[in-house]
Amino acid sequence: MRIRIFLILIIILAIAGGYSYYKGIIDFTKPEISFKEKPQYIGAKKEIIFQVKDNNPGIKSVEVFILQNNKNIKILEDKNIPEGVNSKDYTVEIKARKLGLREGKAKLLFIAKDGSLLSNTQRLELDVEIDLTPPALSVLSSPASIMNGGTGFVFFRVSKDIEKTGIKVGELEFNCFNGIFKNPSIYGCAFPYPYWWNKKKPIIVYAMDKAGNRASHSLIYFFKRKRYKRSIINLSDSFIETKVKPLAEEDGFESDNPIELFKYVNKTLRKKNEDFIHSITKKVSINKPLFKGAFKQLKNSKMLGGFADYRKYKYKGKIIKGADAYHKGMDFASIKNAPVQAANNGVVVYAGYLGIYGNTVIIEHGMGVFSIYSHLAEFKVKEGDRVSKETIIGLTDTTGLAVGDHLHFGVIVQGVEVHPIEWLDKKWIKTRFEKEYNKINELYGGK
Image (spheres, rainbow, N blue to C red):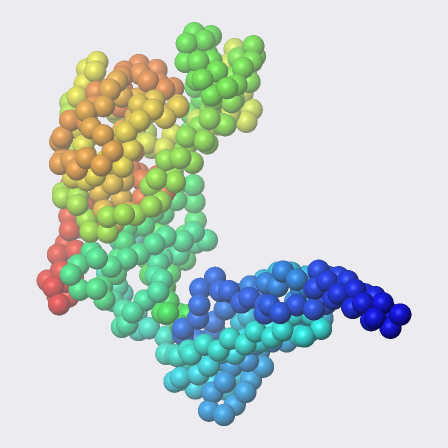
């Protein structure tokens, strides 16, 4: 009888234990702590992003401390975590000066406990360096003036290793980089000033070190407002039938309404194509400038359409609302199937069909500068080809949303279209870029 009772008790305890283990009341595993980027440096203001996980039974509490010179400072305490939370993300901001931290070595301590009966605890200690000194940043060259739709160049020197650097133009931000000169402390870039802005915006160069310390310098410049053309274009039934409808259907849109077809092609498809162009031209893979001298215009050509023309469209005497668009390049016409030359030295980063732009080639020229050639008949180059100025890359045609054989030529700087007229101007290239580049290279470039 006693043996039977004993066995029953053992079975009950086993079932209770199994249930407790299943529910996580009894658990032997510690919570896990992982980082978006494991901290090594702490600056005057630093964000640390991390995640705590515990599959069973879940997280009970999380604490973070910073330890320096026998001081133990709590910077996070989270003890009100609801039962059953298995994963939680944290962003901790450390303001070193406010906490009384000094430059030198310190430790970060992370403590995470689970909700089991054993209260399993994960303790993670990381060595970090407190660095409160921002990088020294000195601007070596910047544009004296810039127009809406224009391009600027900036070169600057920093005092130590940089985690991130760039230039803010109004609310937009663009990358700057070293590798332009042999001296790794010299940074620079080409940057755009958007054509759709009609007012002067602040332009600020900045550099951030590994500890998150930031230095910045506001550029002083004269803003030249350029007024771009506005026009109204009449659409014919022939154009809708032979150009617009095939492009819409090719993209999966069908309609018997000419206006809806045009709106789809000129807004939806145009945006899709331009988003693709911007995704390619935002990625700077060649820091050093490959371009030399002015860019070359299509040989023996005449300009038909200008940059940043704002176009409205009429069909049967009525404006089509919601179909307006900017023309983001220049149209050049020569003879039919005229050979198209690379405007300058560079590397082909795209050669393919692109909706309203038809057969298109995009060339990267270094420092964030790209050129685009559209409505081509065929390609003479492929992606990855290195080309020299005046290398034949294709022939003009009417592919895409083109009326008449011509070349759509554009210059794009870090994902934003800029006025090609500057890049076609020998004097502009010489005074705005070459003179400054050569001066900096002579003074600092080889050191």
